[in-house]
Amino acid sequence: MTHQVHAFEPPERFVAGTVGEPGDRTFFLQARGGGRVVSVALEKVQVSLLAEKLEELLTEASRRFGVELPETSPIVVSDNEPLDTPVDEEFRVGTLGLAFDVDTTTVVIEAIEAGEADAEAELAGDEDEDTPLDDEDDEPDDDLDRLRVRLTPEATRAFIDRARRVVAAGRPPCPLCGQPLDPAGHLCPRHNGYHR
Image (tube, rainbow, N blue to C red):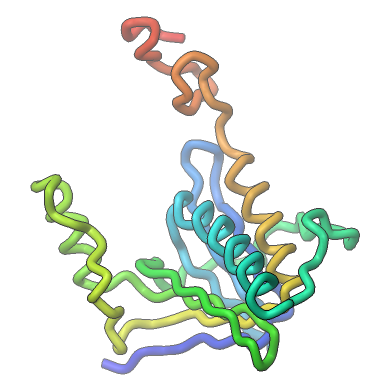
């Protein structure tokens, strides 16, 4: 079976966004360019880690290669627009890859489809907690679909800022236990299971 590489080098727009109500949201990465829109689904923790690792990548690129970094709060107006509709999921992300291209001074982000190995590792993790879920020697299969974008440091900074806002826009944490509060409250372990 052939795989598709959805390449946007550079995209007109690349954002993280959600569909649904807090507590029942689906997270997406969405790239638009050349009359195409590609949306891939992923987990909230993946969006959070992607923003964190992109920040580290920019800092390292500045330290090692002297890349000029944009301000942490860009002066340009932030992209607060919703995802482009319709939001059709191309695939669910299993692996995210990051690189810095010194020749073009751009950040390369690659989202790779979750394959059978990811599903097997997830099932194995449910059964045996000693089974490692992430084997560093395993390379993603070449026959998996991919979304690849190439961003300037400024566009990367804008993506990081929006991704952090999207993650933080969920349900507020319980002041006692830190678990997310539903609109109807939750069973707080700090209250011995009483409804809060």
